Length: 181
Length: 184
Image (cartoon, rainbow over all chains, first blue to last red; front, side):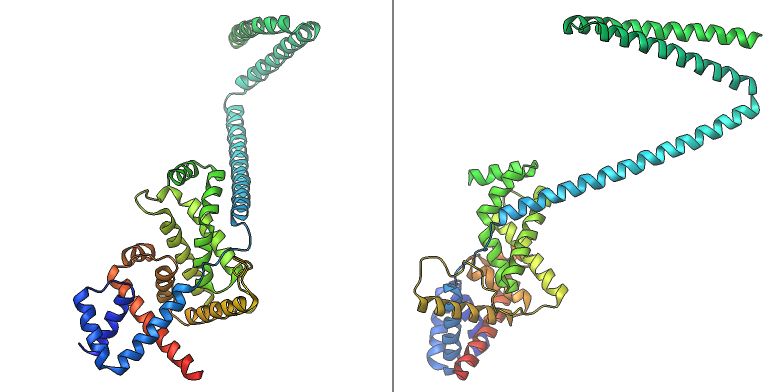
């Protein structure tokens, strides 16, 4: 065994990973070689020093700090997501507005009659909606008892649907009349 | 062990309190590795926090067959090596950088404190003079008593490479030791 091989075996021996027969060969080499003996002593001293070194502890409660940072990360992500969503909505609204305006412009140029009918339909729808809402508001505020309010509100939903259906049909008929004229 | 599994499962589902339990259970080994890699208490605290945050982020990639602490140490060692490479930092001064409670346990006498501090400084000085990949192998071997296979898994190298790194590191440490002895 040469000195380089002996050094390699010393490292394994320090980790108790050297087979018994190879360890005997190493011991035999050490008795003959003073250089390797000095190396072995130095290695053992260093190994002892490292093995005795204590485990260092943090001066603060890391768990608290980590929890704080996780909380901050979550908040900033939520904020960033909110920002992205707002921009998306804004983009959608703008493109909808632009597209809608372009479509309306095109219809006004092509079919001026349709536009005037549409304006009248929208105006009537608004009037009907306003009347329905006012009626609902009066009903809800004039009934203090909560169970009665809940009952009436329960009936109002189908009633509102019927009113909407009626308005839709009535306006449709009126629209047909105007087109015929 | 069962509690650890429960905490891991809960943390994987986003329970930060459960993750807090894991941090409390493993803050010392994680901090210790960072401290011996970076040589500075403040940098080690920062690195340990960052390692835990990364662990939380990648908790879904953790494989239950592996020891959780070794997985954490793997993240910590990679983070520390990245930091040292980024800053080209080979050594930070030990002046005032010993961990605040490193010398507290067991109420030692003043002589013991001085002796311990000197030994700590000596160890840190020697470790700091090792290349990064050798340093991490030595710390994992001596402070955590990991096997060659576990060190390999933690650092991402083969067992043969671990043996080789430990051999080279020890060769260098023995040389430093002899030089210090010669200096008296």
